[in-house]
Image (tube, rainbow, N blue to C red; front, side, top):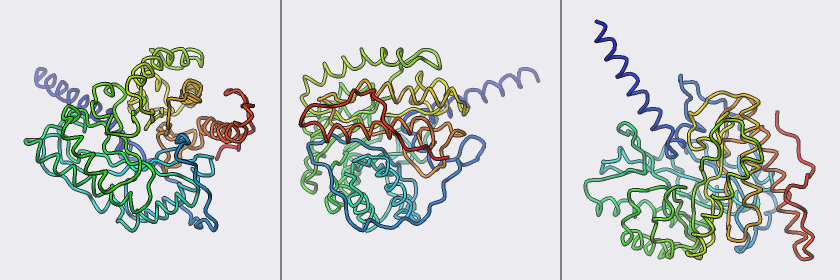
Length: 402
């Protein structure tokens, strides 16, 4: 009996570890955050989505040459999506952003599956998309559209980075159709930037297939193109020259222990920045950080990609998130090689000090963003005479939401 109980315990630990690792991967963070359920089945509380009036007079958009500064919205449902997106877009514009990145999933059953589909219960219709794009543009937000792949029934710790279908030609044919579908909609909606993929690590070695796919996208889409590479896998991608921007996530380990000081976080970024810029100088394309974000958890600086690292809402966790935001801003703002910074994520959960997710809503990190967007606007106004304020200079900020 004792041996049997021991075996059962080992099995439980193994399965639990596999599930944890699967959800800790960046791909599954999309499913584990926002609209998803927390452990135990309790969904994060959502804000009340009040009706927001469309903009009466459209706001001007920043020029193509202006770096993209904004937040990301992961779309989880097509139900009432225009109303929900109108609210979120209004909030992002109110914060002072000039861009919104919207991610939308397609589903593959598991890493070795041949099935591939767009779920209408999750993905908006073409007309809904066009209305969402109009809402963003009317509020002065440029749009980045990022189709992604999620695994609907992963085996163990699978995620989109380890896709390995029986036939790569068939998979790329299906994926091309998926991407071109959204590229056509992006063209109709005058979307400024389109991402042809996100963190498909196992596919990146097929350079010729990616080049062929990018050519097909350019036949139907006239805007700028990029690809979102994993932060630890961007150097091996060999089709950057076929794109306009080098996209990458930013989930680097910045400390060994929770609650690091502001100074230590800034120091941790220095060698990382040197390495990225040294590589970028050889590629010659602007960098776009497609995902910069940290949970409001103690230890988020250790494993920024891991939503399950320490699922507790504490004052120290909120402060660690804020410090990570500040360190990133002080490291990368004003860097001429950077063509865009998109923060992960802004959703319709309530956020606040009892939340330990990625959203900065109602947290000290939100104030960091508001101040950063304000400085960017101020710098834009005074750039002609060079009288730009120091990056760390305090500016009056709007009070946080309760």
